[in-house]
Length: 381
Ligand SMILES: NC(=O)c1ccc[n+]([C@@H]2O[C@H](COP(=O)([O-])OP(=O)(O)OC[C@H]3O[C@@H](n4cnc5c(N)ncnc54)[C@H](O)[C@@H]3O)[C@@H](O)[C@H]2O)c1
Image (cartoon, rainbow, N blue to C red; front, side, top):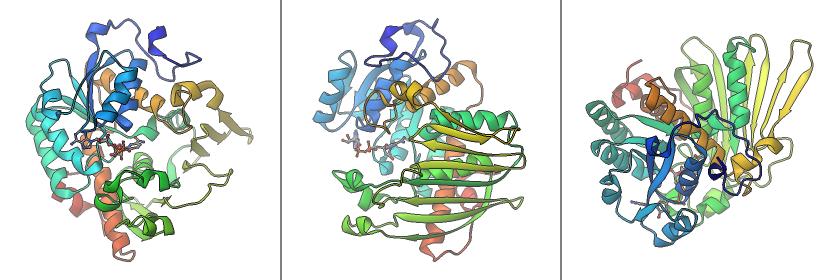
């Protein structure tokens, strides 16, 4: 038991574990891309169904950094070599966005299941090919939509599923973050990606998760001084209005060139307006706010309880707990054969939503329907 929590002061786990699973029956995890992927390998130690077995990165410094924490894991600079390793059952993909698609296809063809960080892909052609190979091989993929697995968001979702706020009528989400540090050493951000696939993947996924299928979006965007200074080709400010087939609205906002975030706001917020109540979940502060039937507002603040598990005593905003939660959840689903979310098709639908937002914003706010994009990728509703 103590092995599951290296360097964690309190052994609180925010996800139910089956402690009886012997290590030999745990899925072997091999991770490609050992920056954010380092967290995934370490997070596997906090699960009862996944064990870290392999890591791959082109950069030997990145490998050395993870090897120091995980001396028993085998490391390579060759992705093909990692895929050939029979110890690897699940491949975790944490490389720059434009590489995800080809790496997913290679993993499926090698017979592996996949956990891929968000965004699962960032272009239509690759989306089509990934879907086709997944159908041909029958391999499973879960999208690592980390925010869904943060404790405050999990509580908000559980309360919604218990019917505590009735039908969701409006959803308002946001993710704002000063990203000067994130441009450093990552030329792919400015050159080969778009903030709609990076930061906006969180609030747009939350919108879809609560509203269900989105019919159309209308979005505008702009570039902050930070984006201009870093030569970003995409907007880094997005404001999105989304409409569902049954006429409900959602709003998502993202800004990746802010200065300070006022204390009253959180980096990621998900505000649900339901027919019977309203609720708000926050990240990084780990707060869930809702109003009881007595009219009293309740603020559940679980940061002190879970900060070791979620942040590993490192920076407020690391993803250990979220990654551990989704690895455990995916592995449980592989064993039981039950449905899980978000799978590949849902991830590709979110990709289509992001793509519709990008097209609308590039075109000055023109409404863009999702159906033609979904059809192009090969998804039907
Ligand atoms: N909340 C989250 O879940 C979250 C947070 C941050 C980043 N991400 C995602 O994680 C991914 C990686 O982000 P990052 O910040 O770690 O990027 P990064 O550029 O800092 O790190 C990428 C790593 O991949 C390695 N790499 C690149 N090409 C490779 C290849 N062909 N084979 C093997 N290794 C290769 C690089 O050497 C580097 O170590 C992105 O898709 C990003 O969107 C998710």
